[in-house]
Length: 464
Ligand SMILES: *Cc1c(COP(=O)(O)O)cnc(C)c1O
Image (cartoon, rainbow, N blue to C red; front, top):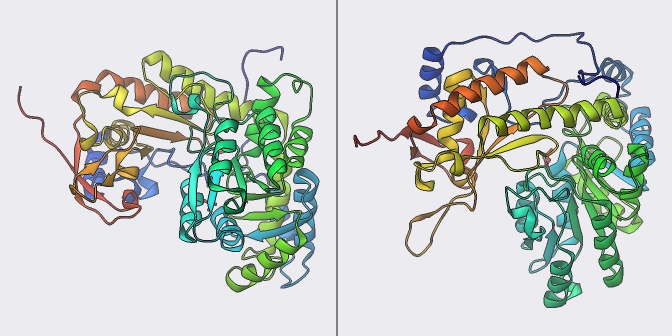
């Protein structure tokens, strides 16, 4: 690159206005929403960093593809275009469309898992874990130790601990392990990538034991870009080739196309095993739809087919990863403790480190999320004791989560650099006021997954 400035590699053809609000208005809105930003109306948010899932902007080519959608019930042209794109990049011979990632998970695990089985993963995403547990199996996370240390700058913190995988298989016996999964990038571990070397090593262990390896492929393109940037031997390879190599070590994949499919809805389940594909198709018909549409419209399949190619564009990926790193770099400069290095799709702030005066029982992550909204209309999500805190069955007391994080997820192709500069400015102001932030208490909740609907009130600080 001959210039220092990396621009958004697109022009804007359609715009959506952002409604501006002031601090007093936002205080009232947040109070009415029970201090839970999930309960805010989206139009009352200025910059929405709640999730990168399904929130991206589609391209002109994708919208054009939508018009070409073939809505035939069976054997639609759109299915074949979708199949060709998935097959070309991922290489799998059987591809079932589904309405989103968790549908693929439900079909896969209810086909291959039995009660008492164990499914290892670098780190299960929450819906993945829930679907494994729903069929009575156990979801085990095996990240490398650096993956659990926010400050570690290991280049592939998403890697699986291969020795721990061997130990686990030896302990429970290979017959209890229906498959091994790798999540790329590791969402719950901070959007951190998995190296090709690690994929190969995990695949070798699987082959040794005759176990299938499945990839949770939600952010495969971002992961492959990190491989190109950070792993020896890949600097000159096109990302599509890196992706083909990565999936060549696997036997199947689940995918939420709401992430690196660059669409607002959709996903797929892929495998090379014809017998498994048959069983999965039976379940798909039962709950999602005929195997050539799987609960999606023909136009959705077209948008995925185009999106899967656009997401592998080097200019797009350079901009994507650079803009996430840009936010991370500036927050670090301000003084925010964040999960290092910045991941692909989000920045994770360590709220416990930022707010040492707010104990876990008073939800430091939620306190920060609320202040970000009141200060500048930003919406982020708490990933800490509100989301993962659990009640000790013996004492009835609440046990905090292992980390108190706040995630700022960046939608794809939606915000420009000035939007991100605004986020940085708001967060600089919040940083200055950090000692005045108050904790919260829950006044209403409905477990499990209480974070979506819980209501809070601020705890008045005792005068000291
Ligand atoms: C989003 C996500 C899923 C689930 O996909 P949905 O489309 O939300 O159902 C599974 N795994 C990972 C890693 C994800 O990020």
